[in-house]
Length: 253
Image (cartoon, rainbow, N blue to C red; front, side, top):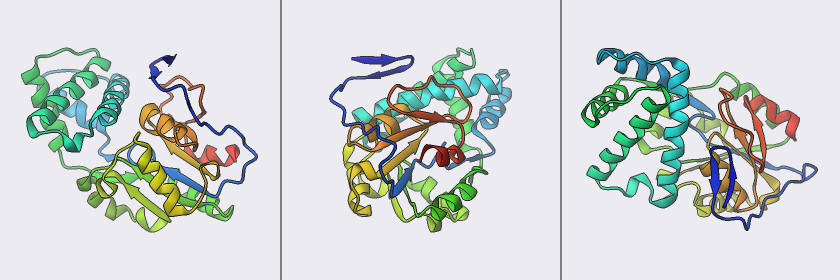
């Protein structure tokens, strides 16, 4: 097993393409956490839920917790996608997910309190909004003759919420797990994206905010990955570049 900080991988037979002088034709993006975020932000939703139950957490702590929780979700999707879990198993999963969020914030509570916190935070009305760097970067990439795609594990409900952002109209190749029937890091969703764009792996880049789902998912099919870490909380992986804004992509081409 190879390890790097919080990262661990089982498969060392990787097809990573590291050349920077290859003509890139398409850049694929993860959606949530990469192109779009919740409004109000998840940090605010969690702080409001905690305050309602008499708990105090910081924004930085919640962000650290989400790094742990999202890595936990990526491992679950690699083992058995969340969409395939029974209702009771899914409820248990999200108790574990919320516990990791709280762990990052230095809080430990009972399963009952954890369940109430998750219910409060997840049921608060919210919408998806694009990060400010998305549309300007898309315009620059299109000016370079690069096409754009998505490879995302976003749910059907969030996909409907995305309609208000007009993101889909900006994308040439739209792939989300709720429509393809397979989730990252499964190689099949990346292979579907390559087939739809009619390109070879070395002609693509995939950008995402999750090491297992995005970086290793891309690496295993030979796509060049880029890790997006908007809050600079993750160590730099040995497999790829790490950026804090997608506008930095221009310098990587």
